Length: 188
Image 1: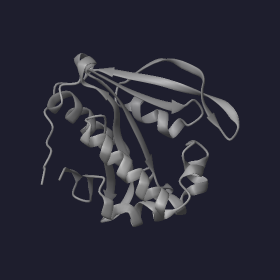
Image 2 (image 1 turned 90 degrees about the horizontal axis):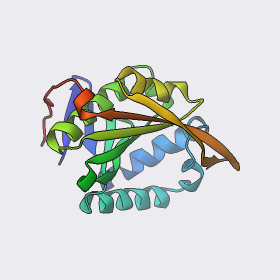
Image 3 (image 1 turned 135 degrees about the vertical axis):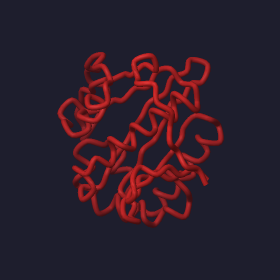
Image 4 (image 1 turned 180 degrees about the vertical axis):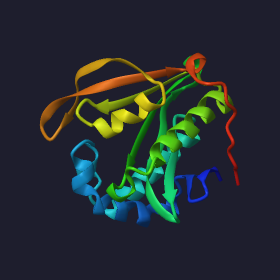
């Protein structure tokens, strides 16, 4: 099992099937909040959808295509953080994340993404990480900007959200541009 302490009150844990109830409850309680930016919210409307999502994520983990994590704060599930579209021959991957509204503004996701960057670069040997965020989602865009990712461009009409095309900001970070620090992960 993968776990990583972010601080004395927060940690990252591997997404596991027994988190389905907590993940569905968090998603359902934050549906309006998440729907503004994330196209998958409407397709994840039942507990069965959440269980299927977790199984798909774990299948992706088994194939080496993703690392699905959950973010915890004071013993409560706060959101998810995933390394996905992992292409080991090219040493690339993408990072995706979301938090419940009550957990925003605490630095949780910035610390989580920083930990995941260290893991991806120093444990997995990746060389390039990308983050895509809706151009108008300033909170989400602040994370890669805070962590030194470079804005490489705007992907025009990259996603459809609520029946309309939406632009996404593409950020990238290269290992050579990341401060050389070893991860302080604690795995159990």
